[in-house]
Length: 102
Image 1 (cartoon, rainbow, N blue to C red):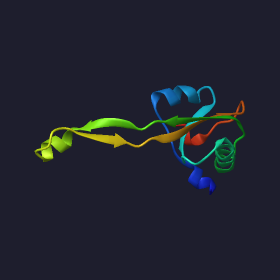
Image 2 (image 1 turned 90 degrees about the horizontal axis):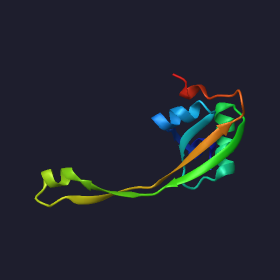
Image 3 (image 1 turned 90 degrees about the vertical axis):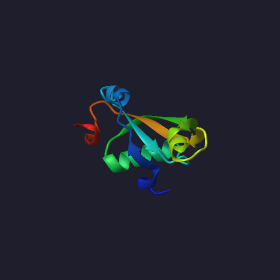
Image 4 (image 1 turned 180 degrees about the vertical axis):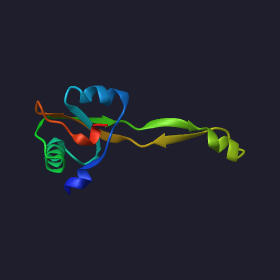
């Protein structure tokens, strides 16, 4: 798997912004990627030293699609949102990724 296929996008939320202050960054990664691949990809792409990688599988969730009711005569339709995988990457002290700095 190519390094640029492993990391899909950074996740920027209130919680990840707080983690950034502790030297931790969060990325959405390919579901087939493992810890070593994520570590190599972050080190190569952002030119930093990774100390730790934690992987979390976010499960798929069901939700109701209200638009289906408006657009058709059917009652509310249940739609499944796909699951995804995220990685929390902790960098060596004193290092940072400038992509997240605003």
